[in-house]
Every structure is written in C-alpha cells, then in structure tokens.
Image (cartoon, rainbow, N blue to C red):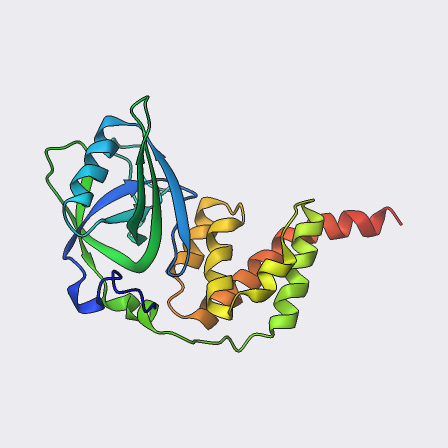
Length: 220
C-alpha cells in the first residue's frame, strides 16, 4: 500500500489487536484519523500499543446487536498505526492513526487493562496491500454523484483536493469522510475490492441525494 519503511509488512501483521469501538471512526488504508484519547482504559491501550506494533483496531458498535455490556461489535474493522503522538497538560493524548489493513475478528481474549482485545484474521483483506488499483466505475460519474450529494446536503468540499486523489484513496477517504449511518459505513468497510466498494458507494450517494433532489423538483 505504501513505500513507507515503517509500514508493517503484511506477513508481519500481529495475530491479536487492541480494539477501539467507536462508531463513525474508520481509518481505511491510505487515510489518516486523528483521535482525542481521554478515557483511562484507552490511555492504557495507546501506551500499550506504543510499546509494540503501534496498531489499534478501529471497530464499529453493532446497533443491531444485544444491549449487552460490553456492547456487540461488528466483526470487520480497520487497523491503524499510530504515526503521531502528543500529550496534553490536562491528561489527554492526541494521536493520529494511518490506515494499514482491514481485519476480521475471530474471537475476543481476556484483558487486564480495561480495553478489549481480539484475535484477528487479515487474509480476507490482503487486497489492502495492493497498489495502483483503478476502478471500473466512471470517475466522471462518481464526481457528478458526489457534487449532487454535497449540494443536496449543503456541504462544502475541496474539489481541487478531490481531483488530485487516485481512485483507491478517494473511495477509501469517502468511507470515513461522509456522515453515513453506522450500517451504511459498515457495508463500505466490508466491501473487499475497490470496485465492490465504489458500487456500494454510488448506491448510497444516489439514495442519500434523492430526497433533496425530489424536493427541489417539486418546488419548480
């Protein structure tokens, strides 16, 4: 995915990960995610991760799961590597994760530091280490759909920056950047290939923009 010498080799990815359940937060490969850490258990998680591979598994809470404590989680998440770390005078940690690879939880394991850990399988998402993948979907059509979505939702976007992104980075960035519902975001996370992801993305964009477009048409 990158020529960065600090990026872990796929075959060296660990068999277990600390889990950070946080709906709406995803760090797809090629993207970054800033986090403000203040809960004691997650401060423990970051300090422990810093002493090992610096990897944290971002995972969404499953809203359709039981109301158990701890809450039910989706089984597919995204692993990010800590690339920036800053302490604050009031006891928080400001970190930035760089997306590495998606994973599937195969089981949770006991912990003593307050945060959850799991055994994980990386194999279904080895595609995250491939580079230069281009989508079959028309880039112009996707851009048009994005413009319609952002206009319908009265959201601003830096179109110059969008146009400079390659297909894979653009689609991965949109997984985290657009305010999807939890289940919608999860279906994008779980789409294995770029072409599968962009097809799901296009469907969600059309569905999200349709009410506003229809409402506008009815007023004319």
